[in-house]
Image (cartoon, rainbow, N blue to C red; front, side, top):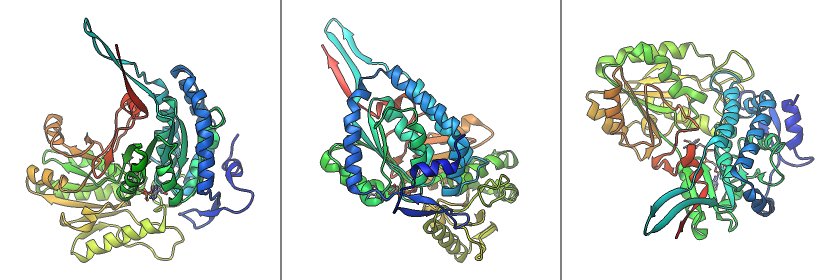
Length: 468
Ligand code: NAD
């Protein structure tokens, strides 16, 4: 049976490298290799060399490899979850580490199962035109630190399925998780179709400007997404950009506060709030305001936060100090503005990890920074509204549009409101529920391009029309 120590032994360099700390305890998890721009070039050359043989396989053969890679993930699931929990901080239980590893296997299998048929556009006496998708070549994948394994699979699975080879650049905060995942996947994949280069921002920049990379799959902040657009311009790369979000949830006046409280909570606090499509601001009508605040507080008080390896915990630390400081600053500013803290807001200063308590902030203005900036942590502002029109206007007032949600006892009414919101996905009576069959992507500053499903496969191919 693989252990997390066994996985680490396969990735830790013989000498050199950089210590990676457990954000819950401050202990060293392991040493990550520090790859350079030269290492990146070597990886791209190797992936390029392997690409034509990989592309020559049939879809069925590549799908078979993805299914076997999913088997490998399942064989090492507990070791991967433990390493992920130690490095990222997320608890084993709840919608966290074990859930993330399970999602890796599920996404690999789902991606293996989709059918992308040639599309017949015209077929009449004048001729025939078909749309097909050819492999792009070598795809670069650059990821964040919040869901490092799952997002890597979101990027690599459709890329491989479409006949591309892949070079990944994980976040410098969570390289071990992605390196370990690749070790496991490479137990089943042919040599050199999947590489991981564990370096810093310079390696990311070099990947996005590399002449032999045909496409970048990027998930991360809006600022980095803009930098990648610029650095990929000279080589005219294809891009899928999954960027930051600041998702609104709108509770309609007919909702049942008690019935929705648990789902509202997890919509906002999944992965301790460090999720791109988490609910980051909640709009509640006057008639339900106190009830929603009370029900959410009740749920929040029941959710244990602590070290991820403790089986009781469902909330963990912030992954890094910079993120902790953002949350602490935003909550302090909210308090100073006169907003009311319902629960949390007072971190303990004498603990080793980056724990910030689950925090709900009421009576806060829509222009407060805790509402307008992406907090990416466990602090939810609850904004009061008077009319549904006003709520929709406030939801649409920011420059990002990843997800949103509408909460109501009347799904038809909720659907009408959903259609007015500027976001790539609007959920009704849930938030952030992604599904490998359902396309996912942002609008406005949250990026462009779709992941998942057949649309996600198309994004990893070069469209070609054959006309005769
Ligand atoms: P980040 O943008 O700081 O870093 C992401 C990755 O980009 C890292 O691997 C980093 O090394 C690399 N990078 C940094 N500068 C680069 C450059 N100039 N060129 C190329 N690569 C570069 O993001 P983060 O802090 O790791 O992640 C948090 C952000 O990601 C949040 O804004 C969150 O909303 C967003 N996110 C979005 C999604 C989504 O699906 N839309 C999912 C998860 C996270």
